[in-house]
Length: 223
Length: 223
DNA sequence: CGAAGTATTGAGACGTCTCAAAATTAGTGG
DNA sequence: CCACTAATTTTGAGACGTCTCAATACTTCG
Image 1 (spheres, chains in turn cyan, brown, blue, red):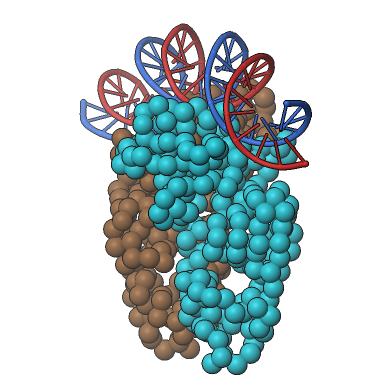
Image 2 (tube, helix red, strand yellow; image 1 turned 180 degrees about the vertical axis):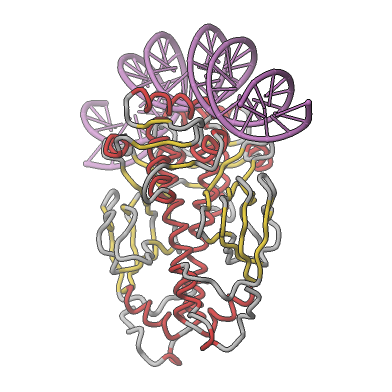
């Protein structure tokens, strides 16, 4: 930490590697800790920093004037978020649980990108990943049933946070619902349905630890 | 047309200008014409070209296995589409009406971007625009009512295709519905409702020419 | 063990979808 | 220009899925 981005380039790994492979980080300016529920940045606030989740989990969302909320993405350990092209953030970001993030000044990133085509390529690649996720999520929100949405959610989380073993979801039902365009009751009913069908198990003492018993059963629901 | 991108750079305007301001185009390899309904490229086909609408209109969509369709975007005159970072297209693109598109080989674009940071910046900027649109559309699909969706659609089309005067929608109700995550009947009912309220007028002999009588009435519905 | 927060379950309301019919528009050839 | 047909849009009525509101159960944490 605290290594200036303008330091001798030979002394640190390429930025490209740090951004795209999330290898050990050296250019990040500092770490910050946020308590569960704390806001990291607000929608339309100036986007001066780019963030990476070191520990915990983050939700990014938009609000309508009457409080309806749409979560656009969950950011898990290793994920980079808050990267903007324009001057302001387009989402509000909040810590879902106690969370540690790393920050890098956005300007320094852009300066590096200016000089280094491979870094610029990485920024584009990250933006493209976000776009791809959003495109798939539009299909989910516009055309899938509640059961299909929950199945897709479980597969996504399984892929992203439990390479092997139990999936411990960091978020409440309400967050899942606002991510999937449903109510928390409908999410709960869909999970119960999947449980009854033997496709998932709840384990331990908490309803937020889930074991996928039948991934192909889920995948079938994901059309 | 037919000017090679590797031709003497002094002889043509900067690529950056052509891409971002859509000024008169010289680097495009060729033009193609597609009949109404014709497929321009399919989902997961190799993405060898980037396209610009010269005349007409295009829809980009994804399908579920049982035929449910989500249109991710409409591309109108001047819009660039089919720009990918990975090897394949992520949508199917079809001509909504008889359409003329300009093509440029993707590789040549990337070669220019490699050498020219400003062009690379433009590619990022275009991808960011697409991302921003998708983010707003997620909010619409996840959390807005049918009336709000249709209102938002009309405001978007008004902004994009009728700088002054009548809005002549190129697409059918079904396309609007698949863009908004509704059925065509629900779209039709919402339009009738807006008509009764005096917010929009249908004019001429066709229901696809619409005049906004009360933009602020629409904007209010758009929360 | 008690209290607060979270999740599940139930019953009815509501909005959108489905299916069907009528109305309107667009296209074609006389 | 009109008649005829096909395609699209509108409108209606009922079905269905999700939402709302409420009660109960479970989990967490002091």
